[in-house]
Length: 215
Image 1 (cartoon, rainbow, N blue to C red):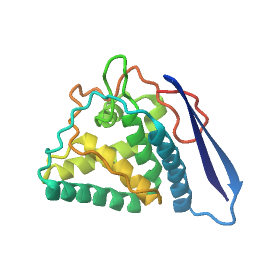
Image 2 (cartoon, rainbow, N blue to C red; image 1 turned 30 degrees about the vertical axis):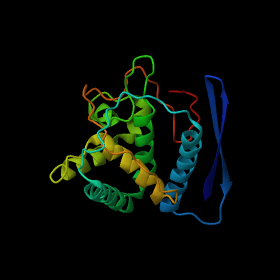
Image 3 (spheres, helix red, strand yellow; image 1 turned 60 degrees about the vertical axis):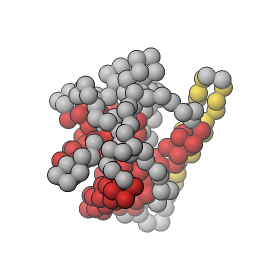
Image 4 (cartoon, rainbow, N blue to C red; image 1 turned 90 degrees about the horizontal axis):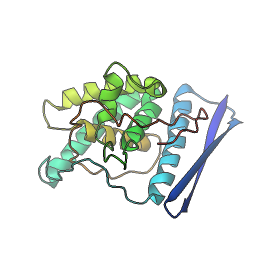
């Protein structure tokens, strides 16, 4: 059996940003399917934290209404409900741990500075379920279906947006994998175009299969 260790580095040079990630596989005494899934998500979480902790603030075309869910108490109740549902989902289907995290990352990484489109608007879900998903993202369709179904259930009691569901799901995936608790900005608006993420984006392989594509 094997386990994976992930290492990522980042170098900033003026406006040019270079990111490099590598992984190595070592032999471990024992491993279970659940452990393998968790290790994979931990690797992705480490990569995400490395990138976000050193990346300059970007301006994405996503409208945020901090008061969308009411006062602080109501907002925390919304967070707890969503993350609780996601936690139950991942506990029941641990194989979705890594795909849910990748889904959240891809949604956030689609911002196109030249057009002002994309960003963490939840459009990644409609892109994957729209009938013609990018081949690089086909493995994430089961996770997208689960989050879409979860959002429909949550809409019965709260006006939660898909953008917030995807962001909170990614944060919960990191916590479930043993990563840090992340603060998510709530109140993001819906994807208005309905066509998913920015069509001109390329999607990097976040599953450790060696893709060198960039967003």
